[in-house]
Length: 164
Image (cartoon, rainbow, N blue to C red):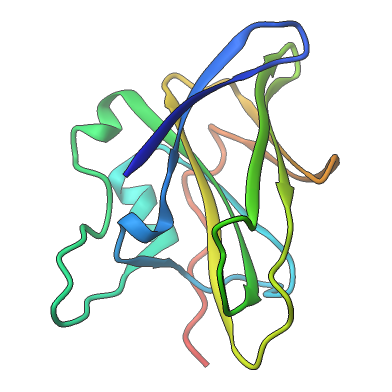
């Protein structure tokens, strides 16, 4: 399921994006270090998706593990993930704006963690946008820079950590 939106940059130019619903895919973000911090990724291909997100097959479920192959011909995904307390995650991430300036692309969003719980889960914000991407992508969480990625350098993502 996609929510189609556009964010207005500081200079007034709209940057179209589609917010991907994590519940629409039967996948989870692979482990990262440090686990108590955010994980950021620029996903340009189905192969990148498979490196960042792992399938979670369960009986009786028919959701796809990833967007369809044709999705990747024209779109890329900006993803940021956190480990949060288990619970209702519907309002954990809120996109403020997606803007393109001389310094690159900037995804500005609010992160409001769930209350502490007896168990945790990984939850993510995934924003699909048209290709091509600029060379630099910045992730701004609650008005604070948390990640800067060079889109041409991130193809070899760090290998996922083995499960504990």
